[in-house]
Length: 336
Image (cartoon, rainbow, N blue to C red):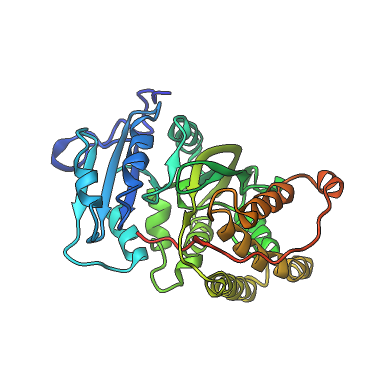
C-alpha cells in the first residue's frame, strides 16, 4: 500500500527543505552482526515505501556497523556512537535522529512482515485520536525458524480501539506485557515526546510496557489481531536467575502500576493478577527455553506449552498437561 497524497503526511517540509517521510523505522544496533542484515532487508521489502530507516549503532564491537553500511538505499541513514551507552538511551537516540510523524523502533534482530507498515500506518494516520497501534508477533529462533505463532494481544479488550484504562487493567491482570514488544508497535511522535520517550531510569525488562502506558495518556490504543512481525530469541548462556530477575522486575512494575492507578484498577484486576503470578514467572522460563538447541526435549516441551497456552480455554481443556519446570537456555534480554 502506498499512502495517498493527503494532509496527513504530505504538507510537511523537513530538514534542509526535504519532504519528511510518513514513517520512521529506527533500529538501535549493538553487536548484531549475524542478524541485522535480515532485519534491514525486512524493512526494505515493505509494500509501504514512504519511510526513513535510521540505524543507530551503539559502538558495536563486531561487524554490525559495516553490515549496516553495506546497504545502498537513499532511505537509510547509519549513525554511530563514540562509546556504548545504556540500551534504553540508544533507543531514544535513534528516535531523536528520525524525522517522521509515525515511528517504529525495531530491535536489530527482529523482522517485519511486508505489509506491517502499510497496515499500521493506515490505522494510525487516519485516526488522530490514536497514540499507538500494535499487532501480534511470532517467535523465531536464531536460524529464523518459527517456534511459536500469534503472540500478544490474546484478549478481546486489546483488539480494536481501546482507551488507556481498559489497557492498563489488562496489563495488571496479565502481570507482564500483553501489548507487544517495540517491533510490534507504531506510535505517534507527538505522543512519544509528551510521554518523555523510553524511560531511561527504569529496568530494561519493563521499559516497553511502561512507555506504552505513558503514550496512552496522550491518545488511544488500537490492536490488530494479526501477526505482522517476528520476535527473535537467540540461543545463549542465560541461567534460571535471569528469568527470575525478569519476572521480579515486572512484578515490581505491576505493583507500582497498581498503586499509582488506584482509581482505575479494580480489586478483581488485582486478584486475577495475583492468581497469574506463578504463570508469569513460568512464562519467562518457557520463552527462554524455546530458543534452545533444535530437537532438544526442553525446547520441544517449551514450544508445546506456549502453543497450548495461546489456545482458547475450551481448546486448552482438551490438551491438559502437567506443570513441568523448564530451565531457560536462550537470550531474552534485549540490547540496543
